Image (cartoon, rainbow, N blue to C red; front, side, top):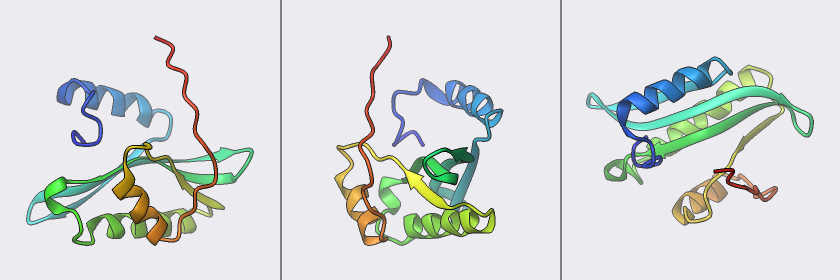
Length: 123
């Protein structure tokens, strides 16, 4: 997660934020290989007016040293299966515009760009 969210100030801030988000339905999933975490995803299942019951992926990252080995696909497949099992109508995620390799991966996995995500920093 540190590779995806370098602005977090260490483990304590990460754990604190996860606990707050868990109160809002946030969950974490991880994939290990030889005792090391290689892929992690943070997600939530919630209702959205536009899409109904939706599994939204907040975070999805594979360690740089473990990319292109099928771990990201395995995690994506797990999350999509979970969404179907829970009765979700949609599976969604946002991806930063600079993450072009991730975009290529999502497009290969038959995901489509459906909207733009706009942000207004408030501090």
